[in-house]
Structure formats: C-alpha cells, structure tokens
Length: 105
Picture 1: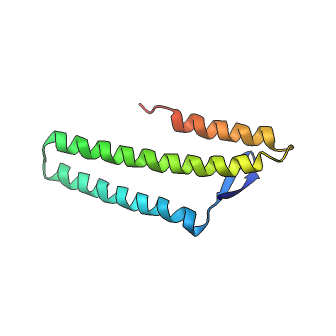
Picture 2 (picture 1 turned 90 degrees about the horizontal axis):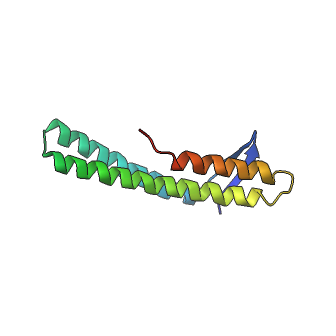
C-alpha cells in the first residue's frame, strides 16, 4: 500500500521500491519507444508507421498516469480517514483527477 503524508494541501507519496519499480520499468520502455520514433523520423519512415508509434507511446504514458493516479488515490483515501484533513485531502484528489482528465491542445 502506497503511504503518503499531507503537507500544504497536497498528498505526498512515499512509494516503496516495489511500488516504484513498475513505474520506472514502464518509463524505461517508453523512453525506448520515443528513441525508436525519433530514429523513424530521422530515417523518413512512412508516416502511418510513425503515427502508430506515437499512439503506442501515448497509450503507454496513459497507463503510467493511471498507475500514478491509483497510487495517489490509495494514499489520499487512507489520509482522508483523519477527520481534520478529510476535506482538504479530497480537494487534492479532485485537483489531481482534474489535471489528469484535462485535454491538452
């Protein structure tokens, strides 16, 4: 279970090595995908192939975001059991979810 503390209106995570490792592995694979995409662009590969790599990297990043959100929610909900912090913790969780759901343009 991801532990956290509530500081200045933010839930700060304290991940264990076991919780951090899958995130780091996924990010390493995404780095490889991005390097591969760069090589494709430099080699003027077919646009559809490049776009497929962009979509794959985007999907992989989305999965990392879901893992991060899950850990944040887990820690935040544990902290929200403290009555004095409940509303502030819930507001932080809402802020994180809003940021994750925002569309970039």
